[in-house]
Length: 286
Ligand SMILES: NC(=O)c1ccc[n+]([C@@H]2O[C@H](COP(=O)([O-])OP(=O)(O)OC[C@H]3O[C@@H](n4cnc5c(N)ncnc54)[C@H](O)[C@@H]3O)[C@@H](O)[C@H]2O)c1
Image 1 (tube, protein in one colour):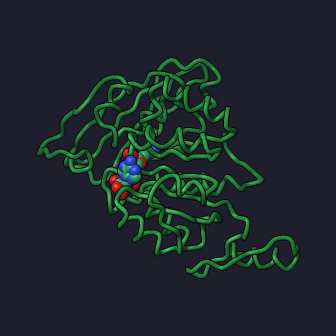
Image 2: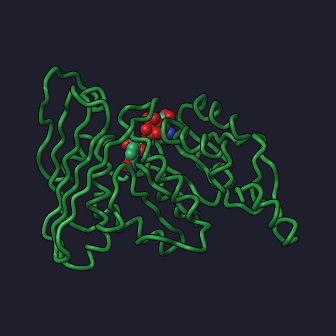
Image 3: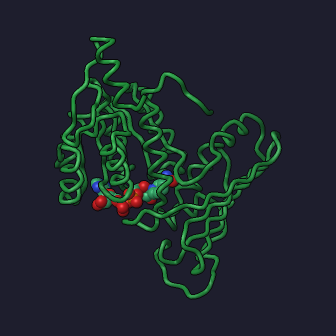
């Protein structure tokens, strides 16, 4: 039974469950979680396309971007409302997907949490600052809200989180992208950065969310190497973790978003999966 047939079945079987049809024709549970998207670029577009295919299961209710035209263009696809500021958006939604920039996290997430709303943060680089992270956690506790950070552009975060129950000895990440994806031009392979994640996040804020996600997930400094390689067309991440549990190595070879080569499609998919999972009654994986 496909998702829509299942909804129709549930509607007839259980009269208390009711559905409405979105402009694009998809059935959405009438009390579905209302989601606002802050930052209407590459990731927002992939999420919206998923909603158009009826695969999201939440209501994309509101869109905000500092470039209002971007918000209008994406909102019109799903019959969403365009907010002119964050306050207006917060009146309309239960959860905000931040898909803008690390600076936007600093500027908006405290306000989102203080309004008792949940937030899903894509610009995870902002969370590598432990003082800021602790501040957000305190706010979330005080206002009974939740902060989610999807696994983004890498695989294996479930195992890494489990591994962190024991002692982790080392975590390393090698990111290899085309010069274009790193915002530079280069004819030959070159190491752009080698060092600790916290410093890399400061130097490549839009490109090193993976390092930040790893670091926060296992509460350990991450050794990062960023390579610009004109010979590659995709975004590569090699993660190696050594700890009491043994050793794990993951390799992710990511297709880039068409509208932003810095961003991997998998990162947007991980946000979609996390959004869907908020309603799940069965949760798989750590
Ligand atoms: N977690 C991960 O693994 C992962 C992977 C890829 C991208 N990202 C991050 O997710 C974020 C979004 O990525 P994207 O590819 O969709 O970016 P994008 O550049 O395609 O779109 C970002 C949008 O946000 C808007 N924006 C920026 N700052 C804003 C602000 N302060 N207020 C309102 N709107 C603002 C811009 O106008 C733009 O429309 C970036 O920070 C990126 O680094 C995370």
